[in-house]
Image (cartoon, rainbow, N blue to C red):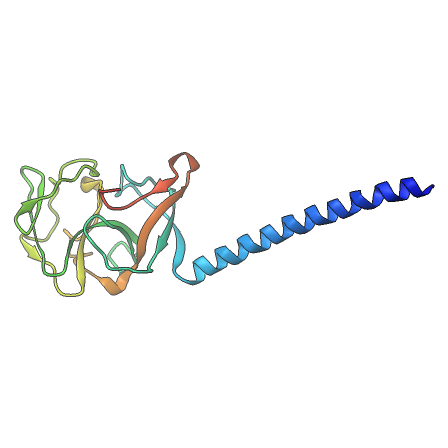
Length: 191
């Protein structure tokens, strides 16, 4: 082997090492960022059931966060409150503490503080009454939630779920990451 051959192999080894080092460095940085995000408030969850159609479908994977969590109308939230269904619920906030909810089940219209809600996110009008009578006023520290697929949702219209104490809200849904063809923000009607 002459001197020219030795010199040409050294740069190749160095460039491979540098490339491998940069790749490993990027991977470590990505892992550290993900761990930091999840350690300080972001989590993932999976949708189970059809109560949030058409907004969310069974099997959708979501990223949720409790950071800055002050539930507001339109937020889609994950609830850990024990209910008769004995599972985590994903519902939309309809009203917050002190607000009064009334539902005209014949017309399928939900009213909050006397104003009809514009609900472009629902699958069908709210014509299914469960076991609570209306109007209902949301107590302090609670929210009133409903699924977007109103005929197939166990929600605050039922005494089995009722008003949700905000301490049972695991977080607000930020975005859907799976399936990838439906990737994007989820939440308030303004989004």
